[in-house]
Image 1 (tube, rainbow, N blue to C red):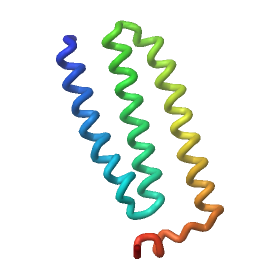
Image 2: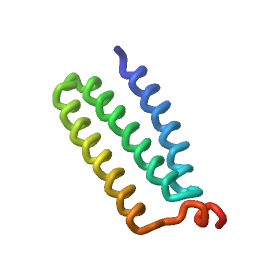
Image 3: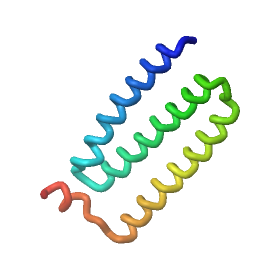
Image 4: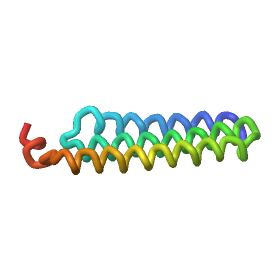
Length: 96
């Protein structure tokens, strides 16, 4: 496939990341922010795999993408558990 396809696909992914970034910045709750960061991480994984295909080294970039996915997943779990233990009240946060 041509480089134009990959550029177009990356721009579509960038638009999706922009929408998720809005959710990370505006909230309204901490859970929305965590999910937004997780979505951005997922889109980053797609860009990593597209980059690997563009360079013709998919097997190398898939390994990087899997490692990044694992770090993204563990980070989301750690943040969720932290805020659960901290006792963040989602209803009071939405009232702000």
